[in-house]
Length: 601
Image 1 (spheres, rainbow, N blue to C red):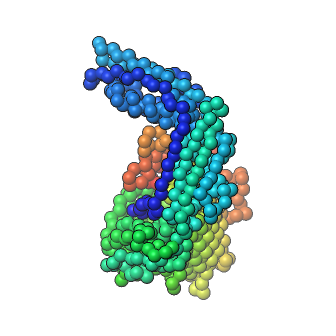
Image 2: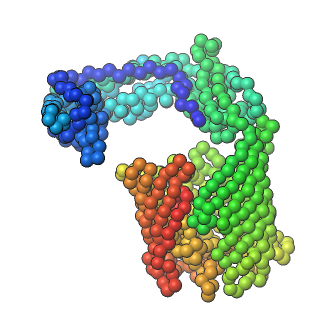
């Protein structure tokens, strides 16, 4: 795991000068076994009673579960109510009365609480003292506090963190901040005072590595975003921690400045605490796919060959529709630069609705991913494929093809979670050019644009949408586009009312032929949490695949809609969808049941 240890000492105090809450008489206790039959909160308005109840541990009993009454817990709940009001900026709020009625015959307790909210406290003035290196106006720009805004308690902590974060990112890692305030009893205005001790700026001294058994020191140092002599910036330390952890070589990573007593002058040595992983991995996986059904695999890797972070591996994968073997090699730094090179050699066989395809070959990919989510990669493919068990009519003239292609992919990914995103977006643009001197070499150009967006809404719901546009065209008019290089639609992720790959051109037996132009839009998918790890979804998909771009048009667009359920389990998201073709035609099914792992997109 990446550590979240504090990288600098910090002292923050928040002084409170507010009207004290009215005293509440001591609450009566009750013997064990008494339950809460009712709980009412009167006087609530600015802060809804539902939010106030969530601040309390004491709850009324339900039909299926009794809630015990404990006076000591209720006393703490009354303090929590005041904290809740302060979180909303109501510092004058107080509990006027807490009435507890005990029914000894039924062993039940009814609780009535009356609160006085008072006025919201707005910020009248902010003063800053003790700063020498930074102007008041710059520091005020860091703060979530502003004149005229409501003084919420959470903003005090956020202001403290903002000051220390900005100072530490400018080399002042020993800075301190004190925040206090006073509230005018007549106007309810708050006067906020901030006291800063900047301390001296710090520079990076020596970089201290622990003894490493498996990994070369140069592999660690190349991932660091700082070096000796740089100004100490906490964001650089955190980014270096992240990069080292993502190498997959370490179980835990911590980077921290040495104590001031161990440093001379402004220089601070950086101490790296690293716990190495075992370099050998053996993985066994089991999954389920809409078309493949049950699938499984075995992988054997050396993830840190000779301490260089290079990765070698072999894998076997299989399902009811697929089997394959693969050898792989990865170099995280190519020619001393942070570009990752992946080399894959594979042999596999896949069953598709209209044919089976056997492939053998390899590919080389060189790419880089930046912290802001931008990624760029180039790829070379050298692959032979053979179509067997042809089930389409007519049978293609060429059943064997050779792919010699180069490709370029650019994209950006800002999703908060690649497996179950709640916000963010991803866009990817792929281009591929295939050709060769052999008569059996496929010759075509292909471009694909894929975009997805995830927008959070109220109550942890997510509105998601995705778009895929693809074009492929033959560069040699005497050669057809191989069946396995064409576009298809209708699966577990888009146009979910159609059987697998049957949206688009079909032969007379309704076997998919594929096409040269594809436009599929997951127009909307509304994901709504239901209970804990279970959520529901409704969706609408639009699009189609056409024989060529010239025949594409709005009249050919197909529409599917449906609903489903998801369960976020420790092994991934389990998904069950029911899809319906809205504009259903003759011989098309009425419904598709889709069970799969992972979100649709």
